[in-house]
Length: 197
Image 1 (tube, rainbow, N blue to C red):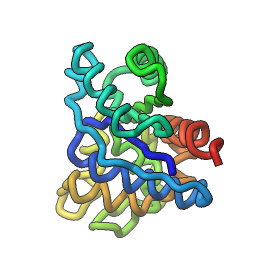
Image 2 (cartoon, rainbow, N blue to C red; image 1 turned 30 degrees about the horizontal axis):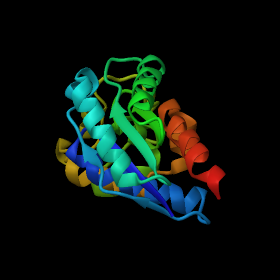
Image 3 (cartoon, helix red, strand yellow; image 1 turned 135 degrees about the vertical axis):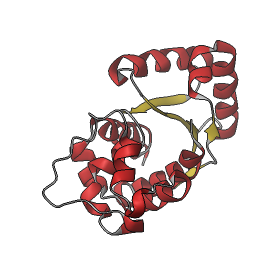
């Protein structure tokens, strides 16, 4: 059993990320049992910019996950470059909890970019619709939530309800193919879960 203590920035990710992690477990490594713990919700800017807050939340995650666990930080990159900010956050985290396995995954630019990457697999779910021939560059738009809203019936995208439903349905392989940041999540999964079976 591998406990996973995640740190996220939105109420919807608190619900959706465990769904996604359980799917990764079931589809990628069914032989390994994982326990996604209730995520720790933070305010992104405060978490990143205030070292006392950063340390406090990491120590909480370390206590929750235990010695055999994994700390997974999943944030939106927004306008930051994931390739620069991710390693910086990881280095800072390792200073505070050097005795724990830690990963930092920054969705480029928003969590919804992962849904965009596998958008065609969401056709018909919760009123979502996308043309078969519509070109999608999941990691380019700044407003992935707005893109999702445009493709929802009535133009209404409810993060707290739609994110968990979409996390339960997206084609994980398609998301990996179309999103570098989702591939990063899968790579970290391989390192911290798959290699331990």
